[in-house]
Structure formats: C-alpha cells, structure tokens
Image 1 (cartoon, rainbow, N blue to C red):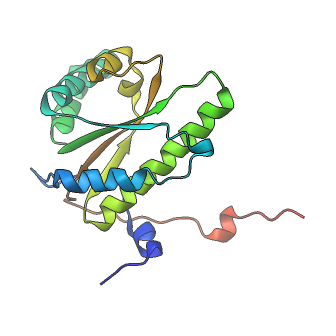
Image 2 (tube, rainbow, N blue to C red; image 1 turned 135 degrees about the vertical axis):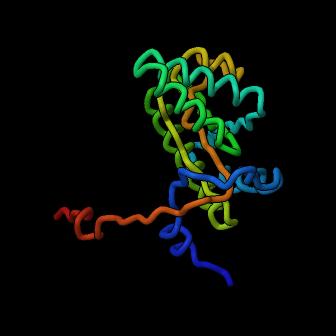
Length: 184
C-alpha cells in the first residue's frame, strides 16, 4: 500500500530508542541522501555535505561528548550519556558551506534543513527512524578535527542517528488555527 506524503509527514516521529544492531542497508542511506539533495536551494548552491561515520569516529565523538558532559554535570551524567550514545546504530553528519555573505549562509542553512527533512521523510517511509541532534558537541572545535571537517569552510547542521525504532512515541501538534495568521 502506498502512503500519501501527508501520511508520511504526520506519522513521522523523532526516534529516541532504536532496536539493537538495527542498521539499515547502506544502499538505503545512499538513496535517502539522493532524495535529500532535491531540496530547494537558492541559486542551486547545493551547500550540503553528508558524512557517514564509522565506528572509530563514532567512539571518539562519544568520548568527546562525555568529556563535555563531565565538565558540566559530573561523572555519573557523563557515563550515562556515554552508554546512551554508544547504543545509537547509524551516525550521519550534515554540514553546510560557510559564506562571507550572511544572507547566503542563512539561505544555505535553510536549504540544508530542507535536505535533512527530505532525508528523514524518505527514511521514515522505508521504516527507518531518525533522531536529529544539535547538542553542544557539534559546535566544539575538537568535533571538527575528529570528523576532518574544516571549521572555517563548513559548519555542522546536525548529527543524525538512524536505525529501526524500538518505540514510536506519540505526538501532537497545534491546530492550523493556532499558528496561521492572516494579514489584510
């Protein structure tokens, strides 16, 4: 049965818990990225770059994040977060080109967010859940070094964990009447 785009959008949820060892096929991720690149982007700048992370890089990021948590919240919180992050099956980064033109950089960031949504909806339609995170670790200079991303040329839009959902949480949204305002 084919689902409508409306059904896909309304059913999509941020997934916080994934089934253990629930990594979808690499071809599915590649297809999701292909669909992501069809996002609207001003002047066809295609500012996005997707970075698929391997086990070694994931572990380094987990440890860096735990270090940041430890400095702020202590050992117990750091160890809890470290264990939690190590459970995440698939890891993908989305970076955006920097620009000296503030308007262009803003437009490129918006385009990357559209690309992220395309990717997430494609994966959701294929039975794969995603969590998009933008925590402090992705803004840390060491994160850029660990991922070989030139901080002067690119910035991180988000870290995306993906896999098969262990639990799909409920959600609700405001009614259109609550968020739509008409101007004369």
